[in-house]
Length: 317
Image (cartoon, rainbow, N blue to C red; front, side, top):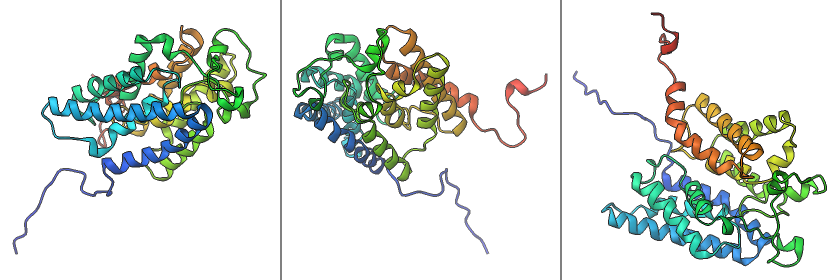
């Protein structure tokens, strides 16, 4: 009896997940931080977020049309980029500047390299870095939470800026930092909301906890060894937002577990070094982008080998 052997490329089993489903889960996970941002900073936070999402959608449609590629807005990746970039911006930023950052994120970081799955750095972080370099005053003007000051137009320094200038944060209760009662970017302040979103992504198996836990753990250990307060560094700035939602990006982080550990340790080390010894009080964006660029090298060095083979540097002769 003759039988036909069908050979196909892996994977041979399909989990049923697709890009749209994954992005929808990420959007759901980002909702608590969005609600917290409106509660903390007022309705202008929602305006910034809506402008960023709309600008990312428009930039994706136009860039795909110019490049003569089929529309890709249905996968919702541009919506995720818009939300993440908005969460990395202060509430007082001019809306046209926020939109410009979205264009840089979608067109330069994503579409010019082929679209989703082919970008070598996280688009939202590149957009933030472009805005930070182009409009430093707007990107470093902070507004205190409405509940803390009673008005939404009081400028304040972020906790990391206070630490960088030699100030003391011991008078600020940790629960105040945990629930976002501080100046900062829209989506980074409320740690409670970010942990809710992170737990949802882990439960849905969209991400594994390896990168976030190793990243945060590295920051904890390094700040403790260098004489800084680990809890203030974890609860301040964009560490949790970056560790949960951006360092875990499928395209720009290693696939295998050992590579993810190396990647996360590198992110943590660079974040602490920039925060403590650099000219900027925050180092999450630059740390993740640098490690994004090194991801191919990390994967090459940590990729699993077939049984019986040795690493090149272990071979004799």
